[in-house]
Length: 472
Image (cartoon, rainbow, N blue to C red):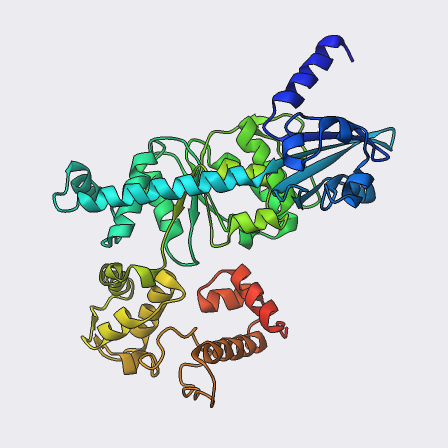
């Protein structure tokens, strides 16, 4: 290595925000970045005279990610607790020469910084919310313009108007947006509205459900492939979803379900602005705005080693949390009216709601949020023999418990509450029995998800929780 290369490497190690360890193949520490002293509570001299085996035995590294790479000979990511009590996320990569493990390069980042950033963002959101509330008495031009620009979004509650205003303000930029919230709250609808407000509105909006693509097909679907890249590949090759989003918006729903390998590849696309198709050697430039959504806690997934921290930082530029429907009941009337209009147009009849239905609609918890509300209304519409939709005609037991998951048979009688059984236990029993029945009648978790109006990953988690398997 030339002197210039040595100095470049030294500058990278000494100025990086991450804390670097360079370790020999047998575990001896070769070099570290200066900031590691404060995080691990050991002087640079002591670290350089130690091995990772000694540091783990002394409790400085709990555990040592380098020893994990030495054991598996593969890259690794895990959460560490240092001797100073700090929690850091660590990554390590092996360096092989002629098949021999010569070096392990590890880097770690103190999650204290992440927590401080999250707290600061929460404070800014709170101040922004208070500012909007103070200005509600005299709506300004921005509020008026929002009403004209909402298109098909039903937004009446103050919290959703704040979110809509925030999205409208950031829409002209190309900043990545991370949408958080329970399943069915409307993340996809708001992503589409963000696209319509953006300068890319004339480009495509590519909606991808990461949980719906099998892992073995994910790379070819996302990155595309060249002719002959694999057995069964189309003769002319295929552009992936990332390329199809050129000039527009790429919306990745259920981003928490993205496999780790694909997380690494997506991160490289975000950083470099280019990708390489399967079976190709040349890279292609791509230009799209990235919006992602999840109903999972990505921070906890990072801690569990299931989601890359560096990708999390890249995605979490503009985080937007959509509240559940039960926390914004003011939006229900507009959502119901819009859904009813769509159903009347789709089925060619003009049905109306009986006034007694509103107590059910406004009083339900709607654990499936907007998606469940729309499914309930469609079942009620189809079940009603007349042009007036009534609760008994639509769902015999909706008034007793409107928030139940859809049963396999609407005619089934209500299940009685057992003695000493709590509401939580009762709902869990109904959910388990519903899933058991569907597992005996439907062929796959995807079919069950479609029947229940929830994501396939949610079905899988529920089945694992109750120890249920699909019969066929």
